[in-house]
Amino acid sequence: MTGPDTFITWVTIVALGIGTFLIRFSFLGIIGNRQLPEWVLRHLRYTAVAVLPGLIAPMVLWPAATGGQPDAARLAATAVTLGVGILSRNVLLAILSGLAALYLVLFGLG
Amino acid sequence: MSEATAKSWYWKGVRDGAPFVLVVGPFGLLFGVVGTEAGLNIAEVMGFTVLVIAGASQFAAVQLLSENAPTLIVLVTALAVNLRMAMYSAALVPHLGAAPLWQRAVMAYFLVDQSYAVGVSRFEDTPQMTLPQKVAYYFGVVSPICPNWYLMTLVGALVGKAIPPEFALDFAVPITFLALVAPALRTLAHVAAAGTSVAGALLLAFLPYNSGLLIAALTAMIVGAQVELWTKGRKA
Image 1 (cartoon, each protein chain N blue to C red):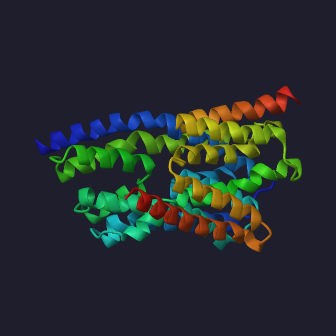
Image 2: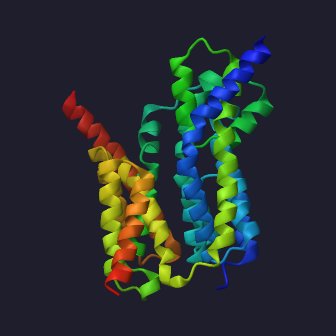
Image 3: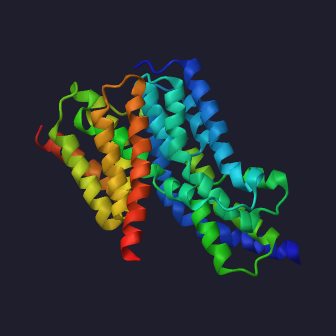
């Protein structure tokens, strides 16, 4: 399998590395002991839940591996991962349960 | 004397950080496998892991790279995932802000979910700690975590090629993200933000350059913040 363009990949890696470092260094190194305004904090709290679900929603419903058709194994894995994650709050347990559901349906019913 | 206490705080940090190897190790392994499956070579996979050292954003970037999204979209989306670290950085200033600049730069590089959470809770519980003790403790916490992150990514990249496509590893990324997000769905505001993100990304999927995701994410952040204000207002 041929991957993404090498040059573009390295530009992405270096720029993402610098950008992420600057976010981490922001207050500790540059801004110092100043309070973030409450409205900024309020939006920052939701960054992860705002980006990640939207990123994966098309992969759940229209997986490229099946030519864009929804499929039972991936939907079952989604439901199990989400359910176990919400109930147990254990990331690793949720991942393992999701993989187990994926393979059970893929190989058990296949 | 102070040399000796700094040393013992370093080892306390190592002990407090060690359990997180169980979380970070498999996550690193998975990134190595997924990166290799996406067509990256070992240098590129390790470039991500060492230079970016932020798992969720690395998965996001690799996913968008393999969808041939424009570089600017890849960067903005992946950096949005890491914006929460600005909060971590601010939270550490009262404890580590007086350290020499080079130490603060190195500590910033190693600022991950675990070093923030463990560090801040220890510093707040133990206010009598001196600055050198806090710095030593912080480096202790990251000592077992970050090297294992690099190492397990490398192992994943090395074994990734050997895993056949029947194993549907394309789905390891959604499973990982679902598992990361699920425990955070603890308030109405978080659920509303996640729901907005999903609905927006699906409805706007027709927009070019994966820009629909960015619009959905931005809207979801605003929805989360507004619902938080609204639920707080009702309680008060």
